[in-house]
Image (cartoon, rainbow, N blue to C red; front, top):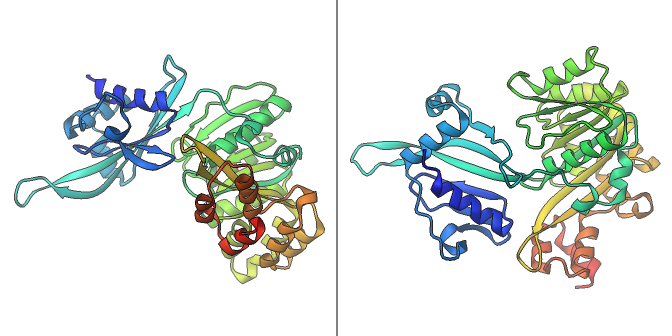
Length: 377
């Protein structure tokens, strides 16, 4: 197996501290940079890897995944393929995600070729600390509780998985706890320190997040549960039940901001269930961390912008319990003394620190008018 071409591409990513590679057969490979997805030819200095052919890429994925008929299996199961490579000699791990997409013309009349894309992400061997992610101390404080719910939200590619891993490892290094993680793919392997660590994957061997949560609640004496993704009502109910029963639950959701995460939970339940569920959430929510990764001012890296909602003032629990979730935005604005901050408040501080451009901040905010008012523009 000749892996020279892909090794060249990974080497470029390694040298430039980029993290993501996008490959489609017979097209120029692209690399994710703070400026966007650039072709390798614009990044490589003196090296211009040729496009990877379909046959070479198919063979390469088969060799790396250990399944030579991966493409047929993926088509039969109607699901994408994901796998991790072991750490290399540089201490780097690579995550591969392969997905089918719309076929393109093959060049022969009346024929089309099945098409697929390959996304490769480079992951560091060391789990970053909460402080190294530039998250405030209030996030660490959230993890001191023996039970309750901490949500991490943000768009795809915002670093939620890394933040969760840093939270779990912080607990692992500071508490004698029994920790179970439920993940679609184990991107960060967490070595046990003070805690017991069990990392389980969905859907193999655990069929669903719901089943994984139920298993953890059923006699495993689990203290801390990390749920990689909560997307449906059964998993949401089980997550709330776990928090209510005295477990510390860390979970991710897709929501653009902290208030949006609470609204999404409320919207999942019908009128009959909503009052009970919101009461549970009001009692057990510890806090929400909403985040976005933004290109820095130099254009050679990223800055993590965040929004923090903490449930340690009467106004937060009351707004959730009474389903007056829209009022949480005002609580956030006034919550600096309680360790809270809106996204706009943090964006403004990043602008003042010369960490990001105004244009980047305006693109990231959900309220550009307010942001301009905060910074006096």
